[in-house]
Amino acid sequence: MRTAVPAVPQYIIWRDERKISNRNTPPTTQTQTQIAHKKYNTRNMKFITTNFVKCAVKTCDSSVDAFPLQYSDCQIVQEELEYNPEFIVHMLERLEWNAVVKVARDLGNESLPPVKPEGLDPIMEDDQVILRDLHTLLVETQIVEGKMVCRNCEHIYFIKNSIPNFLLPPHLC
Amino acid sequence: MLPTPEIPLLPESVYEPAEDSYLLLDCMELCISGLQERKYPIVCEIGSGSGIVSTFLKANVFPKGLFFATDLNPNACEAVIATYNANCSQQKFNTFDVLQMSLTLSIRPNVVDVLVFNPPYVPAEVVPDVPTTRDHYTWLDLALLGGEDGMEVTWIVLLNLEKILSRDGVAYILFCARNNPDKVEELMKQRGWSVRVIEKRKAGWEVLSVLEFKRS
Image (cartoon, rainbow over the protein chains, first blue to last red):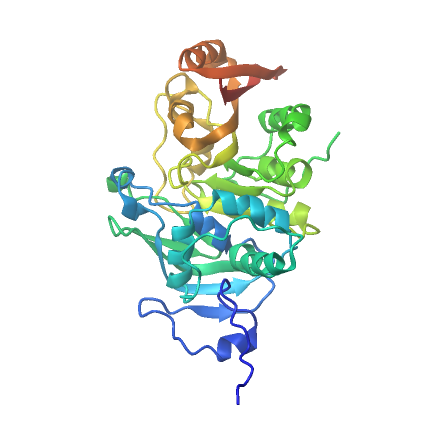
């Protein structure tokens, strides 16, 4: 007899506490991703921001490995934000999807589709589900503490108290 | 008039909003109808300081924008968050991140739709070095002193606008008279930019202006 298998969300890193504890796949070896469910009153680094930041070292500008940075030892929170499907549709056009997939993998989600979902329509019910998941991933999933490493020069940047620090030591400026 | 954000108590090392900050707010308000044609822009403010300008823009101009507020000074980064929280606690769409960063060095190229910069524009012998400790007394100098003609830092941004802005991106940058904004306008036009003066204003003994830069 076939039993109903609950649908696994493809886009989000986790959905709720239960989802976290049921997760079978452990985070990748470099990542000890800790997950907490809190409403923070500070502004944490949002997942979407990882798609817009690269290594600051000048000589890395020409390298394809300087973006996205590699995320490890991240403490993640989920902050409830107003759902705005139009925002997600507009931002999708601006996103480098390969980088979304890579960073999601760094944070322990291996199940993102390899191709960017396109032509999503907030009116269509099927698309709504995807847009909701993307909303959870892109803006509600936030990093409080962690490391960002350039895959080219291996410089390590830190995220502390919700603020990512991209300043370089003088010898790298 | 759009409300001016309230600024919580700032540490000494963070630039307190003054005439120049208010001129920028006034200019953003003057340009509001054109600006709001962009509904979901990526907005970046360089050297956010107290956070007054970014907070103003998020609260009043681009509530659905994605914001990156940068500053070198760790104390300023915290001040930006405090100012944002003090004014936008009712906001349910907090797409506003603070990044400790020099200029836009770590922002992926050609993504910024609206760039705002109130630079260190005071002429000085040199641009100060970035302090090595958080409590160093020279942090504030970094917010003020702009080296030769007060333009050394601003020129770094102007010469990189091509790489910073998205295809139809726009930049608003503040100048004082000693920066020779007329000369800047001319040089940038020669480089293929469309430049206009949004407003020019006497503020104490300084004459300040805000210029808008777009690809022509």
